[in-house]
Length: 290
Image 1: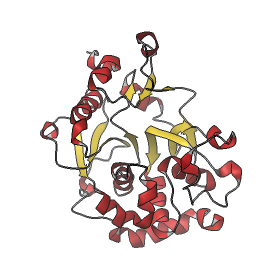
Image 2 (image 1 turned 60 degrees about the vertical axis):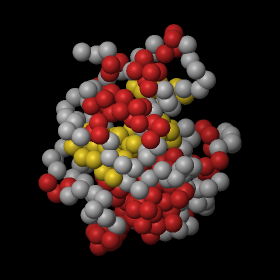
Image 3 (image 1 turned 135 degrees about the vertical axis):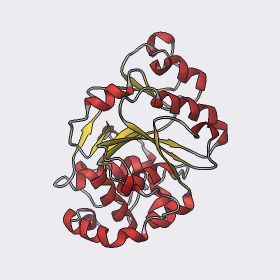
């Protein structure tokens, strides 16, 4: 199991070139050969839960109005959103479904997708692997940044790490309870120091890492929750990939329980999950910035 995880990246790339056509549904993913050759895409993932439509719209507006020169991509489940039509600054709308992602990832999808079985994050990673973008920030719609998104993205523009995310590996090192370890077959058989954990409400991933991960999950029997699999895959293949911890520069706060106004005033911090559109507007500077 460990040997399968510690694959040789160049061999993987050659295999990927041969197998990729069978992984992509051309009806699901746009033809990226004509995409602008931008360095970084900003990807907002939207589930198919219609009850969250207003939150999704607010999250979209927060990013659209505050990402500088970056292009915005939406990966969505369910029916098309009316408010996305004719929207400026929107480069792609990618339609995702559990059926399509299960075909692409194989049996690994069910665990990798997470406890709710949402297809949008696996689809976002797969979209990147088939794009001309060299990397992408992938953001959940219930994530609020109390600063300018464009400044956060720009701050890491010169960082060459394959993964930029919150490192919460202490969950394993301190032997604290975290259900996702038990379901991570990719983690089994690895040295303890290679077993990593991350928080992924907002993270950046390179296309090369996305390509390798998609193929590896599809062609092996290994899987696990994405918050365990992604950082562990990077660390287990440290000769090919690297990751940078967001924590030293960006504070992270869980939006549970409800926080008072004084704590909400902390700048340049990520709050997650924020499920109320009103609360989102209240703490996001995107709606007060000119």
